[in-house]
Each structure stands twice: as structure tokens, then as C-alpha cells.
Image (cartoon, rainbow, N blue to C red; front, side, top):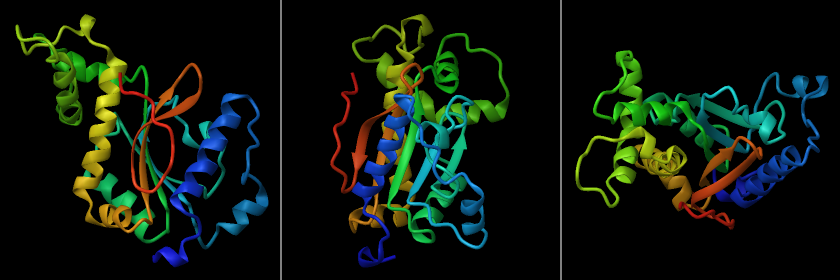
Length: 226
């Protein structure tokens, strides 16, 4: 899709999305695009402006926290928002075939996958399945990165001394980087100004999606990582 044929710019897509989150935060959700007419409109087509990749946590229902409706978000989720080929393909499809102009990576605080990755980085990790271990592995470099800041005595993590939310923010940035690294199509769209990728961490108590990283043509205020 060329820049001239875009439905909305990345900035417009972000402004609409974050306005919906603000409505949710303040208790003024409008619940748009959730009626019979909207269902009928979408029978033969979908034109989401936002592609969202998030953690599969049950508290992270994207259409609710961004006050969106049917056809507004193209969503892929897995435990710990870990990039896999199916995730990359889903995000590419949303951008190249459906015309999404914004890709959001959505992490959250109190993440069980992050806590499990911290546990697996310790001296005596808990038993878990092979598939869970493999899924947690891409999170563990962020655990080590935080743990080894100012520590030289041991590579084994003490879970009681690690800020899990800080690990989550590091992993969020790593996920954005990995998505761009694994997808030439997404990187090309960003390079052409047709797409922006924003990494947010959702605060469970506030209900707010806070941006921590952005690549592409969106003007927003980033929260500090520390």
C-alpha cells in the first residue's frame, strides 16, 4: 500500500488508539463499533488501522482497554509477547494486506511470563514443560541484562532482588527490536513512513497503556525506562 493510499497516518492511528485508552482509564468508554450494523459491514472485509501484538494474559483484553470494537484491531497474542514466525507473519499480513499503519507491542506489569523467566534464570529453577522453557528463553536475556547491572558475583538471579516490571520493560524493547529484525516488510514500511511501531506497558491498576519505545513517524511522549 502506498503512502498516498493510506486510510490514516501512523500518527492518526496512535491518537485514536490512545484516546480510547484514556476513555477506558477515566470510566468513559464509548464501546464503538460493537453493534449489528458493524457486524454486517465486516462480513466481506476488514480494514484495521492497528496491528497489536500482546501478551496473552487474561487481564489484557485489548479491545476493552483501548475502547475499540469489531474490525478496529488486528491482534496476535502469546505468553510473554515472544516473537515467533507466526507472530511476525500476522503482523506482516496486517500491514501489507490490510493496510494497518500502526503496530503496537503490548506488555504489562505483574507479568507471569516475566516472573517465570526470572525464576528460570535462578540457581534452582522450577520444573516446567519443555515448551514453556523454550517460550521463556527469549525473555531471559532481559533478566540477565538487569541482574548484571552492577553485579559481578554470580550470573544466577535471586528472584527476590529483581524488579520484574523493569525486566518487562527491557523485554518490551527487545520484542520491538526483534519484530523489526525478523521482518523486512515491517521495517520497509517504517522506513517509508507508512508504519510506526510503538511498545507500551499496560499498568493494571491504572488501566493505562504507557509508551516506552517507538520507531517510525509518531510524535508521542515516552516514559523513562527506569
